[in-house]
Image (tube, rainbow, N blue to C red; front, top):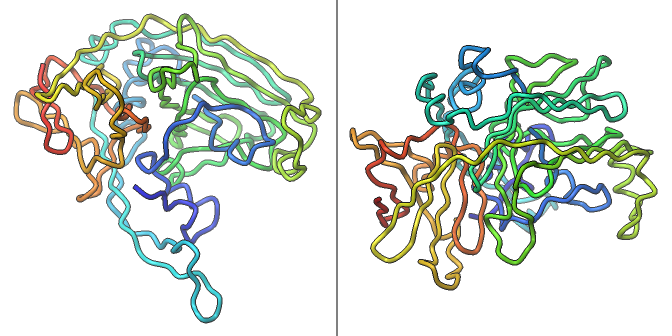
Length: 367
């Protein structure tokens, strides 16, 4: 689908409600660096909340339930038509329908069973400048990973732009006015800020990231083994000031301090493969799924642009509408394209044993 985000008629803080990850172009390896224009979008972050068992299942309820979240109805946005202006030189606009987002309550016992203890419980804390980042929990499955972390600054956290609108769209992103930046290498993700639990001095965040090594086969990203890498930088100027300097590639004179932190990860969650009659497959774990449209052969170029809908049908007849273009729904954490299909991280947990079939457009996948 054509990305309309940059054409939305509203200020920058509200634009994020329009950019939905279902509209993103082919995934590229995220790289920290303010000298490139896409740096803000490439940076990825993660979430907090002590250990799940110690919070009565609250962590899983916030990652994959409806704790601190409200369903978002489908709504309209005014967007700008590319290169078109009226007789007064003003941009020509039209109205576009944006998708609804639905969350569901989680079952604590089922969540613990599906995750099976495969999540980290020892926080990793690092400080860059006057900001402290605490990575609390990481869950992964080989297709993606979910991170819980907090960002603290006793003077007030101002390194991220965040809001309810941002949560509905592309997620929180690094501010152009900050002198720090941080992100996880090898992933493309969306940061959801828990507005209910956060304060001005501490942000509680949840990051849904696609493992880029699962999308590409030419070495663009290294597979995650026993850790993920958090890179933090303190800068000599604000990110916007540095971006405006047009520095040459490789110039790092703007870096005051850089820290690379290894964040341990637990074992991968297991996955189940569903197959279609035409040879295509869908790999499903409790937190994500990956559609492979190749059938084990060369890429057909089938990615999200060729998909109108996909859903999960359970054995009891109920459905999880993950994505629907004709009746706009986008109920997931993040959805990332590749030239062979896509990877989606769910906004709820999925038990493969309860799934009857998965449908992509009109193609059905079964075990």
